[in-house]
Length: 140
Image (cartoon, rainbow, N blue to C red; front, side, top):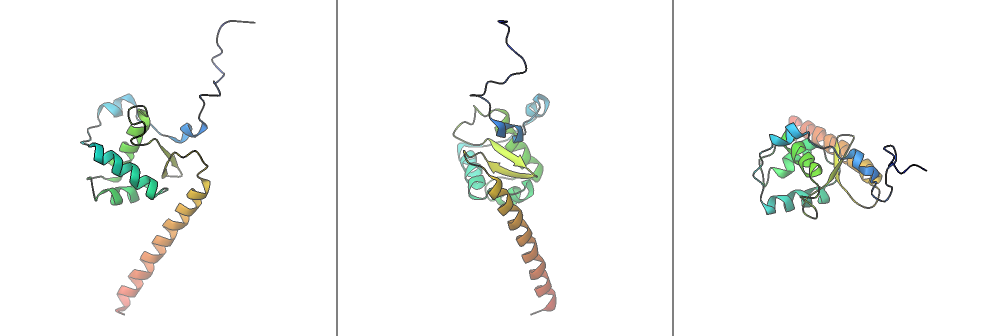
């Protein structure tokens, strides 16, 4: 038996299949990141994603605008930043999963039901907005 390690095998005890859904920044992108986050900002981002799992980057940017000036692009960059260096933010913020353009905190349990609920929630929000617009144009 050969003593050379196999490059094709993964160590199962360290393998985390959900990490394939955790997008990260390239080193060039990471070198251009310039956020002015405080410890409180990290806690607020983590709390927001835990409270409202499965939103899009646009929806999170709106929600996070209460405590930081985010655009959808900078919101996505922040999530990827936390995923790029998970040890730096361990037990503080992230990592976050991105599935079907929706972001989730990593839990030990499956998040598929959360994904379904998030999709339904967004559809219902859109429908409410449409109905509210109809009501406002009728002058009721």
